[in-house]
Amino acid sequence: MELYVTDLSPNSRRVLAVIHHLGLEGETDIRKFNIMTGEHQTDAFRAINPNVKVPVLVDGDFRLWEANPIMIYLSDRQGAETFCPSGKRDRIEVLRWQSWEVQHFNRALGDIVWETVAKPAFGMGAPDAEKIETGQQNFRRFAAVLDDHLNGRDYVLGNDVTVADFAVGSHSALALHPQSQVPLPEFPNVQTWLHRLEGLPAWAKTAPQAPADAAE
Ligand SMILES: N[C@@H](CCC(=O)N[C@@H](CS)C(=O)NCC(=O)O)C(=O)O
Image 1 (cartoon, rainbow, N blue to C red):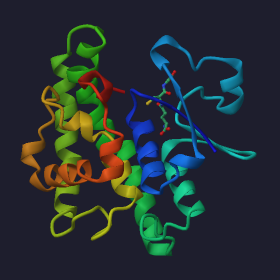
Image 2: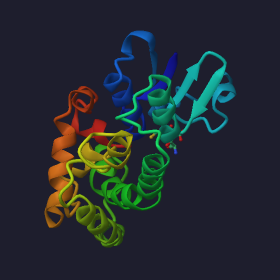
Image 3: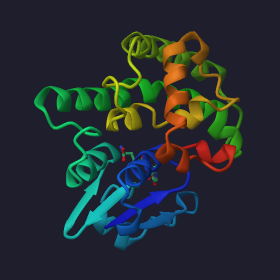
């Protein structure tokens, strides 16, 4: 298999963490682009993903873009039933949390940390206080849902770590970044769960090396 990623991306991190979790490093050729210099903007890569974005997985003649489906594909390929349950009800739970994180939780989180971590790290101008405030309001709304859900659960689906944790928690390095201004202490279950995720070997192995590396 080939996996196209970039160092500066929670979307790449979540897929790389799945590769490690499933022990697929040996059979995966990991190709890193520097998206800041536009290294990915080639006709050859556009032919693989017309969106010209990473991550992308190539498995034989199957080309798959979008991080969340890649995570499910890899898990199903390996028969990782606990990590990505195939039972109707559990599979819908995985999809529910993946949709939710893209649309709500990580969108709000991303809006905050774009201003507080990414812009300063990449010299892209001063953080916009109004955007931070709006992001924090949205984050509070959705983090409250997750905080309530995590009450009495170690992981999003219950006792075991699943692809849903790697999806919902994909921005953990940014959320836990000292500059983030993400109001995590208001949501202790979310905070504890993010630290639990950071302690998992596959997640730890894919941690950004420098503060700026946490940025998208
Ligand atoms: N919805 C996509 C998002 C992919 C995405 O936004 N990738 C970013 C890196 S995190 C990218 O490749 N940006 C380069 C560009 O847009 O040129 C997914 O989940 O995979």
